[in-house]
Image (cartoon, rainbow, N blue to C red; front, side, top):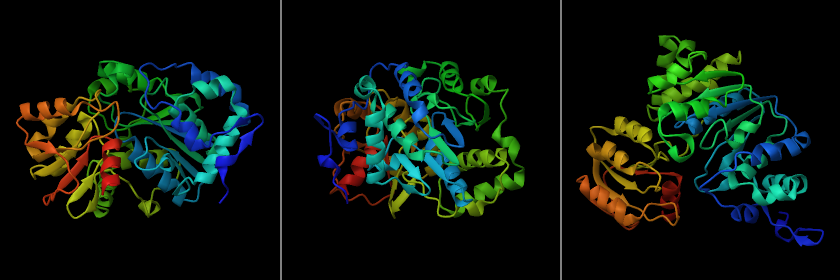
Length: 388
């Protein structure tokens, strides 16, 4: 394999893609919303254009909806790229090309292209997510379909600088209020403003979202009762969480909208990582991190009791999450995460005790026999898997 660590440009040492991304902060207190559009306008003529871009916005379910759709289109014979975030264990998970995570050499070639194409001032200032988005678009090139998941927003998201053919809207709920607004109307408006052409609105939990989306088709209109039953049957047969049925239906609504054949055989070999995934006889992992995800988890397990391995970022409504999950928690184990955004352990411990939840620190040597769920964020699942 080629050694990229010793490559040089004239007069300077060039960083590999891994080292370059490590130099970028993952989180910002304030975002410059003009930076990505301005950069893209400078370089867009150097990029090949995909035949169609499908944009996915919403609060929960973007990753599974995107993977259902990407897998289906790939199995139909189309060239397909799927951009998702964040990753769990390896960065390559973010860029999926024709059924596989991208390899390191392809990432390095795309990185070299960006280093030689993007003006220096943008190379220095682009965020981790913005640069990653451009890496993905370079790799995807002129594919038949590119499926782009928004990061934390919609209208101002880095993925919104590209011309989109269709937008899929997963359930919208409270999350990232510091950037998106404090009400469902504000959050939904910010996300929905990213729609350029047509959109398909997935099943929602807030009437305010429906009120804002009346001009768009609803996915439920695409299927009769028999087809909905078949979707739910597929989910059950593949041992997926029942909440994934709505995400699959939204993906299939896009298939119908594209005028393509509807046949669940095109979902062969579908793999969804950390969406209530059972990794052994007693353990499940799920990357959910907000109250909406907690409600879905409650519906999956109730009335069964589970052990919960958990931690949370400071900006998440952890008290509401634990309140929602309390009826099914046998014992709560707090896993240590080395991240400045993580809530202080003492505060989380205090909150759990105030709620009357049996809580202690997690130790990988602990013997936990009853069903256990690892939940709270991508970082929680990553830490747990790395400790196994």
